[in-house]
Image (cartoon, chains in turn yellow, purple):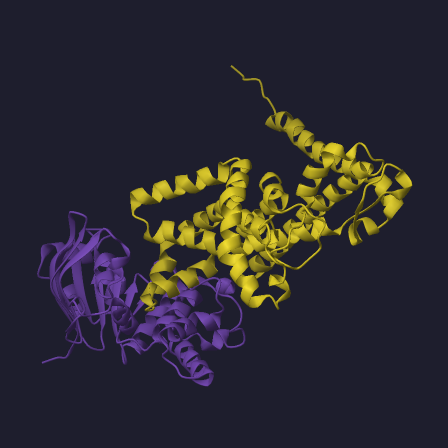
Length: 307
Length: 254
């Protein structure tokens, strides 16, 4: 009996087209809705720090530079926190943890990856921010206030630093999942090779981490993407202030926290919604740039190194 | 009396409760190629890894008895395995230069880690020396900063040999070094062994009796974790004492 031939491609195709179309349309919506503010402010929407809402449209002026800065600044802090955390976690889980503990540690990190972000946010407000304020910000401000980064007096503790640290903790499980997986997959023969050369555990680990550099890049890129898009938890600890500053202890804004905070009443004003769409467009752009940079890095690596 | 490079006394290796090397006594003289031959699964690779304490990477493995390198028992309690590995070089079945390090760095890495050279000039010299010893220098001298991905299997294996030689080991362990190499590469590596044994003692694991016959001075036949026969290669092949050995060298037992 001859079975009816179904072309699987024809079944799969519509789903793919649907996803692709969704992305294109979404981007189009953002561009379309940003047009009014582009016509009004031009590039200033991205180059100025200004947030003048007024009932009379002619007095409205918006520039979201502070939010762009805040998003990048907090995400970079997050990466600086997440990298040592996730590297240490991965190496410990694979090389040192006894078998049973290992499984639990992996489950723990997966659970942490899946926790609702509001959980981190509330914990941030009540525990992390006061703690950071007391043991990090105040001492640093007292002794190093001549540095621009430490110059801002930590009055509330809600700040770029708080947001960055919280993000770093939140995204670590994602980076760690990728790094851990790659670290575990290193062929045993390379472990044997490095130890046969008289390496200590620390030296061997360093060399082996070099071997999985592409995975570390990928982990960082994924973590950066998660950090820059994170909204809820950040809104709770960033301080939500139009304050363009290098000062770590100063409150600020990120793109996503700006949109989340302002969207509710944006409809009252003529241009504010459009300004928020324009801000959202930046997240698209950053996502694209970061991923392209990642692909470029991996390509360059692969051109030389064939594993 | 001949000076011994390596000697085992009642060497036993366990994986968990499973004894895989069952009390082996063997003596390896200096400056020879010593072949450990036997069918796959007989424990020869395991035994080789007992000679540089590399078995310790496997938490299941346990070693009993003694392995003496130039007279010193490397399983004595005060011996640091890192020191042992510094003095005993190893080449593996699968050519495994580090793909993310340049050809130069692959040779230099052991020297750097162990602080065996004082200056950059000395390092350059030693890298060149090791690559020449491994008969690879002429093929790579113009691309030391390239990665090993463009080298052939045989070249990679010689790079690994250079990596081990750079540390001037007392003994070189080779675990089926030509198993994954084409015939031309194999021939080059076998020729290299004749050159190297002038200065080094080489313990070569092979599953091929033909290879053992070609390159070794002494041969040990290992079967199911036991040492069946040991002696000068010629004698073992021409006049084996044990029936199993005869079957193995004539190809009846694979």
